[in-house]
Amino acid sequence: AHLPFVIGVMASRRNPLANGDYLSSFSNWDSILNNSIEYEVMAPGVQIYSTLPGNSYGNKSGTSMATPIVSGIAALFRSYFDDKSIYDSDYIFNQITGTGVMKKALTLSGNLVFSYREVNAYNAITNYIQKISGEVLITGTPKFGEILTADISKIDPEGATISYQWLRNMIPI
Image (cartoon, rainbow, N blue to C red; front, side):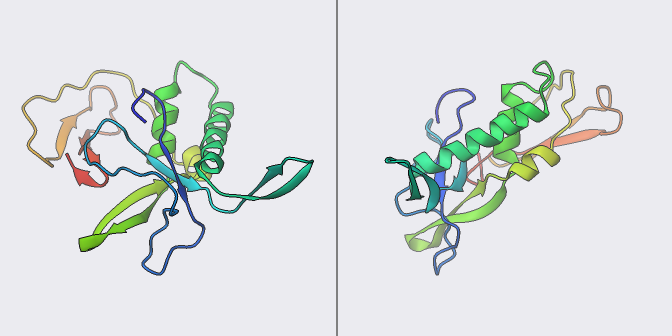
């Protein structure tokens, strides 16, 4: 998704195809690398048991079945971490998109493989990153794929350094 704090959701299947791909055949995905429209996570979206018209239940498939799972994780996270001054929307976004299980989503011709995280409510709640306050200044011009390291000992004595590498679809940018 190309709006702040909007998570692009792809539909995954429960069991992989013979080649190991989990992305459902009908789901959108990032077809153009480094563009402004992103799909950040996969969520179960195939044969999801749901309500149907006529006061009945049945299985449905679609990204419209996957997206409520992600919304539910966001609501669960907000109910568990309710202090918005510490756990803001950006924090929730990062927890959901950063704590899922990495899965092979799609293999294109030439064996080009795309992998994405599949959301995981347990990981989002239990593997949370402690938010620290303060400024970190990284100077210089990073090269393509370079890992940047900054000293944060002044704002978090227990964690003397942090490292970042900007990735898109597991490819350094």
